[in-house]
Amino acid sequence: MTNPGPRPAAPTHRRNLALVWAAAALVLAAVVVLGAIRTVPSAGGGRTSDFLTNSFLTVAHQQAQRESAPAAPPPAAVDLPAEIQGIIGEHPGHRIGVAVMDTRDGQLQSYGDVKPYTAASTAKVLTAAAYYHLVEIGDKSLDTPLGAFNAAFQLKAMINASNNDAWLLLMQDIGYPNLTAYAATLGITYDPEKNLIAPPDMARLLTQLATGKLLNPGHTAELLGYMQHTNDEALIPAALAPGITVHHKYGVVQGYVHDAALLSAGDRSYAVVIYTWGPDDADSADRLDLIHDLTHQLTGALFGR
Image (cartoon, rainbow, N blue to C red; front, side, top):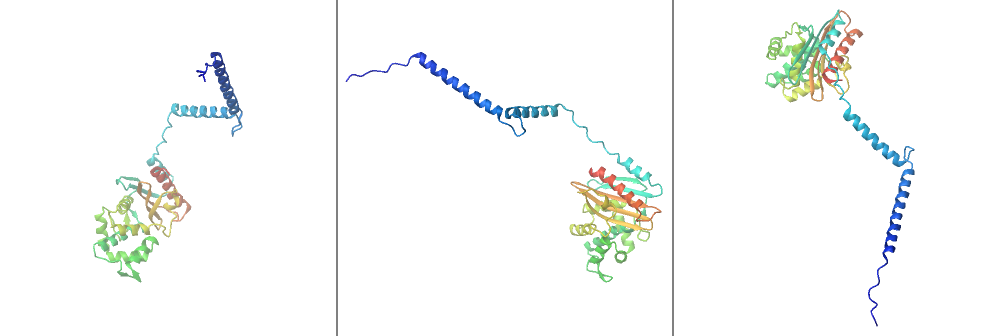
């Protein structure tokens, strides 16, 4: 049987014709696919390819605008002294003193008349601090009977409910000279008989309390706890924006309306003291508006709220 030998190669023109038909088929398939893409509706009602093209152009255009647009100017700084003096000037019949101390660095700002005022019940914070101090050095005990209850009960009643009987019992147990001497160690001038304190001194007291320089951590936390949700939240607390924590002690007596507060938000904390005297009733709408206006202006500048 003879070997037929290798099969002759296909003619060249046949191979070329096959390649042409294959290329044509690929072109035709591409046209069909492209037409399908161009005619599929997009979710927005246009054609898909147009939608994609327009989307990318829009993003690129927006990015170019952001890169070329000038940076927005920072918000104008508040001229706090001018704003506070403006509010004070709107109440010529009142004596008004404001003190603000940054608890982080002790920087003090004072506005208006900051000479000593009748401190009313704001001085109860000083009495509480003095009593806790005596407990810490072993001279007093929170279990000491005072009146019908013990010293621990009277401390809470004095601060949280502003009970004057509790205040008198605690001051008598401390002793007026000892209370004056304790205040002096804090850099504060105070005479329990006259009950006079200057707004900056009250700010100093609150700052030392907040930073743990007065009392041990347990007593600090306890006293600050009594200064929240008190029996009167109508002054500084009522004017605060959300997110600002407040611990405070108000005081009201014979024309004097005060509030002394520790305010904090984020990493910022301030002692804010507002002392006022006026011929109007202590609970008059004008007096409340005065304290609220001052609080709004101060917290807006201090916290941006």
